[in-house]
Length: 303
Length: 277
Image (cartoon, rainbow over all chains, first blue to last red; front, top):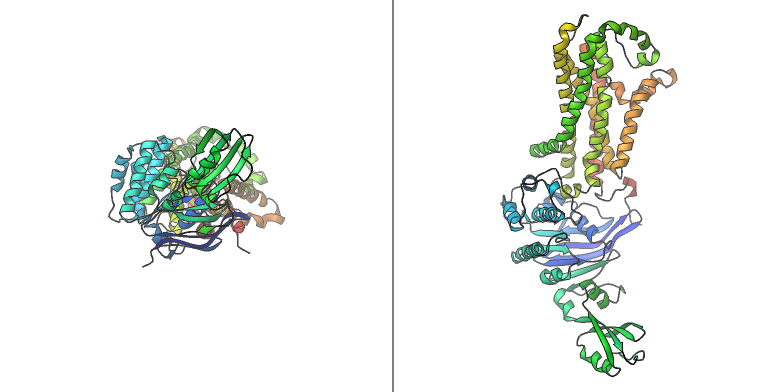
């Protein structure tokens, strides 16, 4: 049995002359929670839309459960729950009518009425018209719609966007639960703790190209820190040259460094120049990626 | 499928009710006013003898002529506006505002989506015409005794003749649905659809005035709809209905083909689909 739930080979999408994604080679394994990261316009949504057969690739292939996403789209989508990033709903329907319709269209797979449990959990009043909902409640409708058929694969584009922190936690719990059930989740997010909390692996896409994929624990094991220190005496250029330390800038009496691993090696040297102030910065997963992979100097698939 | 269809009608409920009421008023007023104007209509006949009105088949000679010239000729043109609005709002409008993405990612083939929406659109048009027909028939029954001239039609004839406008308005609506699957945006589809309606109506009538371009009237869909008093007695010509049904089927087929190939959410012409060199 093919253990890769999602597999893309040289997947390329052009919008006319404009690049959407280019030569994306990606695999997401069964039971894995895969975080898909990248700045706006990088190609995250395009990739997800190709998987759901919303748009068709210019070249390359995309498969889910080993079947071509276009040729077997209808069959595949019975087993895929999807939450679009730009969620738009039929505003003149009540939420319960929407879920009943959605349930009917997805076909009976033994999950009839499960949406009620999910709605209760997310504290969503389904008797109201969707048009009267706040953005957060609309997002809850999208989340319930994605989870309600207990699909084998969940494709979620920014699932917690617009939700308050408590509901965000609930949604992440739901992701963890489906993961425990052995189901696969492919989701994009900008929120580092989310990705860190639930993802097994992450992939970063930039300018339409998959820069790298990496296990989350391996990335954080890098312990990358960004420091800015203000000195009494400015250290000469190259003062911090050593393995795992990169000088990223210097202005006036300050020097900025990116340090991988233990900070002691830097602090010992810095102390010799008299440290007036020190500022540390938490790096986003994307920044760790960019630092780790040399800011776009070629892609790498580590796992 | 049936449940989806009901949903499509629910989506249109407000528009159907509004257009039904609005469109019922027009025939009701014209039919209702006939007894008051009956004696004065002969004076208008001279104006209606002008070639342009003759070409449009307008006459006030009898009650049937009056109803045909006012109601039968206007209803399809007015309802065509709704057909274009709703036709381009279906699929194209839903794609523009993002709702279609949730639909096409369900395990439903795209041809089924087009089919259900086309049937929903067609049913909506039928219901509006039926309500307008019923309202007209009701008014006719209430004023029937006040009409001096001999009348050869009954209320059922009025309803059936108004319903006979359905093929022409549905054809224009189906063309609009197809335009929505072909053009990048609903706005462009609406503009093209409106131009088709206007050119069809005016050019169709004007072409009948100039012998050298007379054959151009066959390009107008309104040519295939009999809006004269003979429609009450003879109904629509089978050949004309066949042409309109052919247009409906052709537009539906094209809509299925182009919607099936369409990159939803992208908003591009079919020829803008990129290929890798």
